[in-house]
Image 1 (tube, chains in turn brown, green):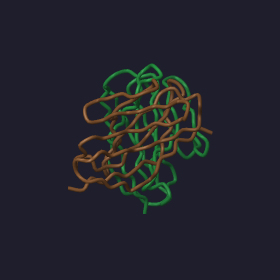
Image 2: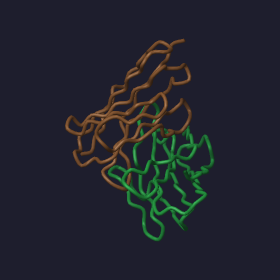
Image 3: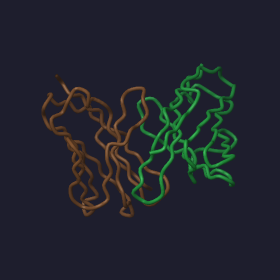
Image 4: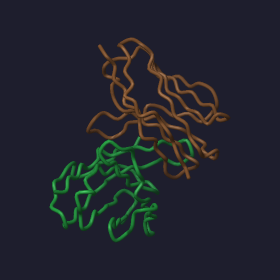
Length: 110
Length: 115
């Protein structure tokens, strides 16, 4: 069974701090991993994806992948109140559908 | 990325009725995916819609309850049949590019409330 696990939170960080969101997956056949942000009442929007071990940076966001530990994380630097949302981790074993975690709710406190 | 238009954006329906959700993409795509997001939950795949063949349903979802059409490479519909309050959810149409590292892109979703 393909499972993606996330801490549901809520995670609260002060404005300007680093928010760290974590995700583990059970299927070692997973090849690519995605982070989505979902504001309340809206559909998920892609933040970034990663498929190689190590770090991938895009602006204030850094995704980290450790396939040996089956662990994916997302760091948000200089957190802003506008980053307050639910963050969904997803994994894919191929070119078909993605399997989503339950999401972590992040609140950035001004 | 593809632009995905989904309608209606929201609806309130009576128990026992059916609702058809439409999804239009601005480019041709092979596969379209229908997800459900129940209140406070994550996304669950209902089915994959391929043009020219029957949809492939995930465990727990059946064609009689969620019939899907895929008449061409840019359009699909999902019908929620014989609705009950447990069907109250957000229904999301999505598409994915080719390649294992292609992300899913979502429409704006249909927020369904069944009374």
